[in-house]
Length: 170
Image (cartoon, rainbow, N blue to C red; front, side):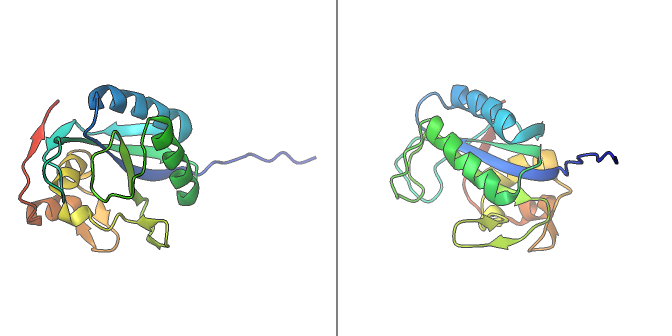
């Protein structure tokens, strides 16, 4: 009888965390713990950054952080787990785009894959337009190449015209 070895192939998943309601720092700590329990090993995490709300004014500033994870799950399963985690952590989807929220977890990249389905777009379509994503992303993955734009994250960060100030919290 031949023995087979179950080889798990890990894929690099890059997520952004954002929130501006409640104790966001404490919620991020819980979210990071739950992401590691559900999705895989956290390889790197950026510092925590604060920025004014993007797209809608007159709401509290957001905190943002980027995570690099090694996962065995496919992108669709990652999305399913992330949506469940957001609900568990208190996110209520109101349908209001760019509104206040306790937690927002977005898939930015899944390896170098490009996915354009009605429910999942990878890479995230607004990465190159948002300093609150590019600055923490460049902190941990500056040499990453955006698979659609064929440009380094560090270059995209330097070229970004987003006027919102991004401040490192810790």
